[in-house]
Amino acid sequence: MTLWSNVTPASRVPDFLCVGAQKAGTTWIFVVMRESIGVYVPPIKEGNYLLEARERDRAWARRYRLQQVEPMRRYYLRDRLVARDTASSLKLFDLYEQECVDDAWYKQVFGYAPAGQVAGEVCPSYMCMPEENIEHALSLNPDLRVILFVRDPIDRLWSQVRMNKRYGLIDRPMDALIRDKRGMHTFLDNSDYARSIERWSSALKPGHLGLFLYDRIRQEPRALATEIFGFLGASAAGMHGWATRTNIGQEMVLEPEHRAVLLEWMRPQYAYLRRHFPEAVDSWLGEHERAILAGSK
Image (cartoon, rainbow, N blue to C red; front, top):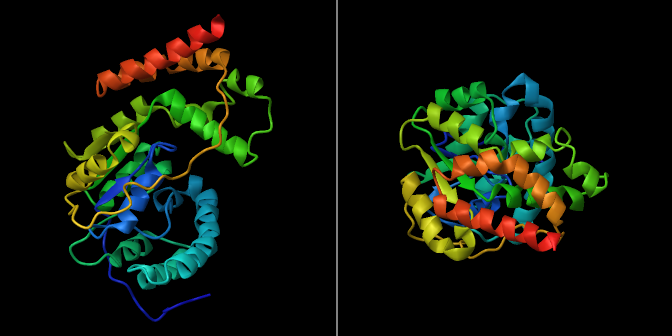
């Protein structure tokens, strides 16, 4: 299905990226940005182009991009027919259906952003990108700003485990999985804030990496969204969607003995994050230690 294929969009680089972390509020901020007039984001979250641009990740990133197109097109036709962004979004789905893409394609995606809007992409897979992928992003825009949500590393990891279990991606007994550090590497990598924050902060201009606490989405969502928009230089006037609850996961108990294993593995992450969010880290560790102690009685 091709719509408005005779329209050639302008060319523009992204002003910002929201790079994660996975299961740490990226869908929430995507909804806020999509519903607000100060920021432009493409209609498909997690386009993964900056990974697809490299040979190593091209096959899976392309499959992931293409498989999102038709479901999201149906959503826009069904649920957003009278919304302000429907027409331009439908045009963009034509771009996303292209088999082979390059930097010129990527710039077209943001060419649909109206004048005056800050434009960017939400893609949590970018948090753990290798340095060469980060360099590629900065070659497109040396003034790039990056948003990174910080969530309690164990809570973030456990949320990802629950999601994968719900989707049938885990077929091992939980005890065997949790105790297999090598088998847990994907979950652990996505909670490796120390490596990712250092990698991004060393590449970006000073002040261009914004770290935001996931906890604030529940505590003060409007204030958090306003602060993020300010960091991006976007107008918060007409901001919507900040009260939306997104991706509510299924309940699954983290057993005390499994929590203890994860805490031992994650202590370097908590030590690193204490530099940025000391009060939050102390609160997180206190909750985990109390849960482990209660389970041992």
